[in-house]
View (cartoon, helix red, strand yellow):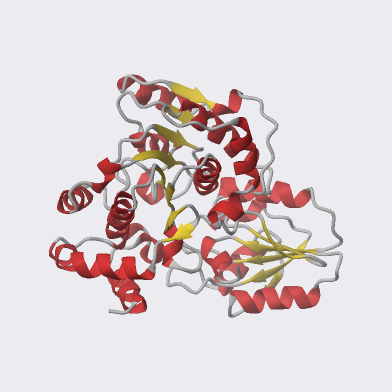
Length: 402
């Protein structure tokens, strides 16, 4: 098969959360463990850091990788979802896995995948771990896909576990209260492996403390620390992520990372790792910013960030997926803006007309467009040089314009 045919086959192997939503969630690790055995346990051949959380886990993972790269290490990075190309999910020192490796890995293991009905995510995790093992990385930063306890990545024994924060996202799978969601995320805490928690929340922190105690390990709250580091990842929310990153680096045994490596790594995240879509500037005059924030907590931080900008008029290009509780998100959004409603081009995309009607209930006025690019184009046309255009609401909205 060609690379594109291979991807088409992989994407067709349901369930895949990205396209399907809740029905793709499997609350067990049976398949992943079977695959690990089939591949002769590649995850045992490299050291790792495991990162979970509702928001901030992608940025945190990329910051960690960038710092370790600056320190001279060969660093694997596994994240999801991708924005433009599947290969963004699996990188070493910022370079994506080759198309040839993807094709060969699937070709070689296809009979096993089909016989065991493996999902897209399960085989992707297997591919990442095999690639990191084959390439003999010094360490891999592994981002959880969904939840923690039953996530396919949760077969590693990391050097440190990181939990960024807990918010209401994927409640249909992870639970409808913060403590329930926290318990699922806390599933990545392992026996005697230290855990760093980015933020304090009175409802969730006791859950982490309890699970850490059960696993006879230490828990470190990064929010208590005071640092003055700068990052090329803009957005105030990165301050919280940076604290957890620095504390995680300090807990790593057997790795030599200087203060200079931390400073340079945090300033060069995009250059070192290729991260996109985090308060990313697409243009100026007018300023165009996109961000992949897609839930109540993430978008409330983004709205605060927008409020700090200098501009005449605000233009919001907005789209969501169907399983988001938009009635919780829409009240947060600024009323003194012109809205450009659109639907991301996936089956889970929320119809733009439906979004527009719902938005009217919260006094958010605007027009409906047939695509993200059309909506952005209209916003650019309407905006003056001193205006501000924001594009977001979903990872898939951002993916169409970066």
